[in-house]
Length: 293
Ligand code: TYD
Image (cartoon, rainbow, N blue to C red):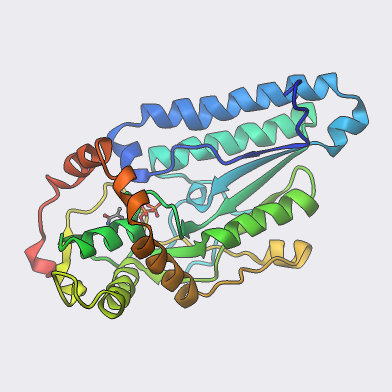
């Protein structure tokens, strides 16, 4: 930091897959808690070296998740910035811990921090362990589409470029020490997401080995502690910073599916080796729930 004198750190680095955190929480504590702590300590030393104006202009933007707020019932209001933290998975607990550290470093050392809590991202370059790219790849290869539980868990989905745009907005105009929720205003049940992906693939890949793709859907053993519903109230960032997502779910999911169809080389590269081992470990023992078929 002394060499390059950055004007900001935008801290995206994290272990982010809930299923991996269930099978191996250690990496999540090390990366998400220890990693954030290490960055905060570096920033504390850096700011101590800068003159006061230098530090006032610096920003540490911490990118977090809506999962820190826990799970909602069907009629509960969406998460706002003042909703109490109630993380339920090792992943969300590690992110909650890192959020608290960021808050404490602002409060105690006056570090110029900003925190964003965003809902589920989707779009190009997402590693195919996450729901949407996993379903695209499996459907094209005529493999089953594993839906956890009854498929009625609800998430809010935001297109990745909208998320990046929101992060830029908060970096440029956010108030120091504040947190901002980012969402897509797109609450959807998992089953609806997978059916939409299947319909797009039916249209765009009519010569795939297995048509219609939705016949590959298979209900499997649920994720332990699976949060039922997340929903984001993104009115603060809209009111204070005039940010709203540009993409609708319909336009974003079409772009996403097309991207995966056009980028087979990237897919080949990321799905070799350790990816296969993960798929085996994660799905081999989940089975098929015939009662939900
Ligand atoms: P995921 O992409 O893992 O994100 P998160 O758990 O952070 O929300 O999963 C999104 C939803 O999809 C979640 O409710 C779990 C569900 N899911 C399945 O039903 N099957 C799968 O194979 C995966 C990976 C996820």
